[in-house]
Length: 103
Length: 259
Image 1 (spheres, rainbow over the protein chains, first blue to last red):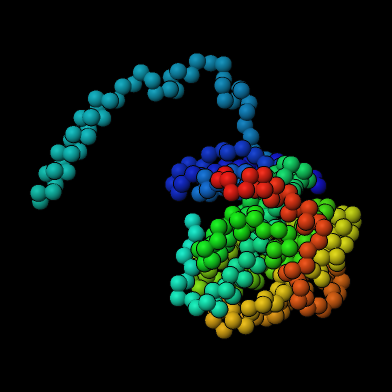
Image 2: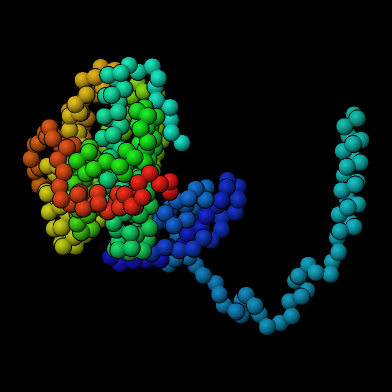
């Protein structure tokens, strides 16, 4: 049998994010699903599985695109403190809601 | 874990139910042990895990059935499972054969799972509430077993000539004994009368035939019309005697011990 690699993603409970669990070898999607179920779901640990042929995944790992050599600190949110602004906004919203409920 | 037996059953019905439970439990128990023989040597790692897991499921079903039988008869479940000699087993002759090669095990799994599916559908309609509930629960897991068995049947039959030849040989060899999953039970009249079994075994056998012939005959050619044999659940083989020695080895090493 010609085997392919299938990447398996699992969701622990409804609403949780799909997380990469690992992979399985299988000749086709039918057996890949069986094997994913056995490797990543047989103990009741998964609510949902996604099984994706590895060669169906479009990959980006070019360091020039992902980690360019220039300083990128201006693209990060660090240094911009919004904690106090956020608290003030929350208080304002609570006060407005409180007034609104009287009407 | 065990479900309470229907206290309302009269003595003949209880005895009949005990015979039925033992036959199903022994089938699941013995196929579970045979298939667990593949652990470590299945064709690929993932299949090894899948086959072993399915074998464990079958042992789990056997355990639930032995516990139900234990509640009905007052006998210890472990003792029923491990304390009998080989001739005391009541599994179908289909399960008397050693594991064989992969095609042989796949052929047997297909024949057994399809027969078990027909039987479980009937048991889910049993007048015995706990048995009906357990059968419904078992069917949820057996659906996956059936898919897995079906996948392998198609894979081998459509694949390279060697796999197909081995599969065809195995199906031909196992076909007569596969009928015996529906071998008549001694207390069958009572089982049907009390509604514990909604249809006689011969009706379930016909239903199974109608289901598997259209799938198997394109692969193996015309299959002979056979009826389940009267000793279909009492015949034992040297293969099974060997397995029995294996599966009871730990229990016999210290009888009565709690594991």
